[in-house]
Image 1 (cartoon, rainbow, N blue to C red):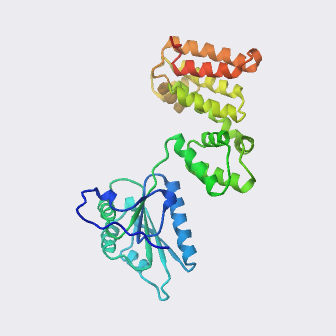
Image 2 (image 1 turned 180 degrees about the horizontal axis):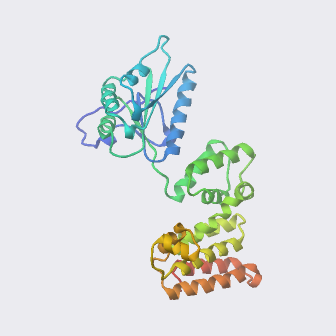
Image 3 (image 1 turned 180 degrees about the vertical axis):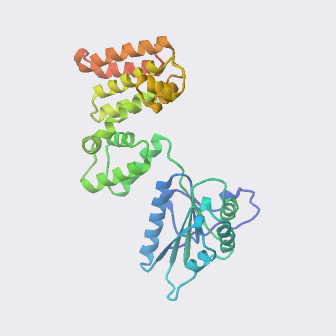
Amino acid sequence: MARAKAPARGGSGRSAAARIPQLAWHEVRPAPIVLISGTEGFLADRALRILRDALRTEDPALEVHDVDAAAYAPGELLTLASPSLFGEPRLLRVTNVEKMTDAFLEEALAFLEEPADGAVVALRHAGGVRGKKLLDAIRAGTGDGVEVVCAELKRESDRADFAAAEFRHAGRAIAPVALRALVAAFADDLGELGAACQQLIADTEGDISADIVQRYYGGRVEATAFAVADAAIAGQLGQALSLLRHALDTGADPVPMVAAFAMKLRTMAKVGGTRGSGGQIASQLGLAPWQVDRARRDLQGWDEVGLGRAILTVAETDAAVKGASRDPVFALERLVTLIADRGHPRG
């Protein structure tokens, strides 16, 4: 596999960060220096694995060495990168570059000036200012490197794109409603989402339907009841309605949805108007300190009238989803809208 060459250095006026190829995690390719930057550890690990597999496919005799830049022994980098007796290719996976020792910084800067032939040095930097001099040198083109950017996937659409790519790369299709449910079920951990995608790919055949997602991860999907409540209480109407529809589309029971709202609003009502530390209030009310702290954050923007109206509407909605209404979904959406408006209906 041909190694990427950095553009020639010169007076282009561009920033140092723009002088070497900037790649997404799945675009990683061999180069004398591969800088893997960003806070998303799961994507960084995946990029490292892709790089290792590509090099091993090219030459099964690949030697792989791990170096901890935070506990670096002087001379280690040059020794491991130097050609062996039989000239096997080498991959050096260097972790904790953001915590590097002074000795590593000095020797890495020297190594950039003359990388070892046949070696790929992958540097994992998880963020922070430590090692800026080294990163600037790499980004300026010294060492003919590439940078793989592994930024955290904060938006739901980014996580959905990631999950869709997992199935696409495996030659599998997933229904849009199933994809939304899967992403909602693992909204807090990209690693768990990736593992869930791989499990579905390994354990099932054909297209991934909403029923399959429900069968495997129904408990996690139902857990989105609290995600719906959290979004609505925080005033995020669009996100709350989106999560609600995703959950209902995958067969989630409306009753636990209403129960999640009731639990959170009751806690807010208990905590509202109290004074004292979280520990003191928790002891008085029979709650955990974290519940008190969360309720106080949730109460921001609410008043007594709005909270009272929301609690009454929860009771009405509970009856509606248990058979008192012909349209329980409408009742749920009305509840979500009222709560997102802090209990004060729109004009």
